[in-house]
Structure formats: C-alpha cells, structure tokens
Image 1 (cartoon, one colour):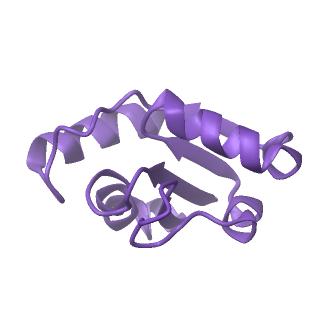
Image 2 (cartoon, helix red, strand yellow):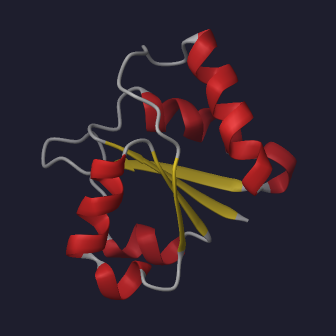
Length: 105
C-alpha cells in the first residue's frame, strides 16, 4: 500500500511518519507539506500516487481538498489530529503515529 503523510512544513510530523512507515509490512511511504515553504511541497502527482493520505490536522485536509479536489475525491483521506508539538523522530510522536495509523493499514 502507498501511504502519504502531510503536515505543514514536512520537517517533523510527516517526515517522522515517512521514516516509520516506509517499508513497514511492505508499505511504501512518502511525505510532504502543504505550506509554500515546505521541505517537500505536496503535488497532484504525490496525491495521485497514494492509496491513503494521512493529514496531521484538519487544515491540511481542507487545503488539499480545496486545491486538488479532483484528485482526492475518490481517495481515502484521514485526519490524525496530531498537533505540531513534537520534534522530528520524537519518541512520543512515533508511538502516537503508530497507534493512529495501524488501524488503517
């Protein structure tokens, strides 16, 4: 399964999720950000590639649905409700991501 993780800047939350889930039980994972200054900015191609799109906050869901409504219309988009309170690869963030994501994959 192809998993895409989105946050604002693609520096902490979504990048941590990509590192955790890429190769996890054979899944492929990528990550991107929804802000213009993101490390890797979300594109229609990335959204099209994904089987499931995981957004960290509701604002990320809203942004991709506004800009890429045609691409994400038939996609499974899940909001994890994980606020921007963690550093990259923070142990608590890793545990939270695993507990939230595992039920979908």
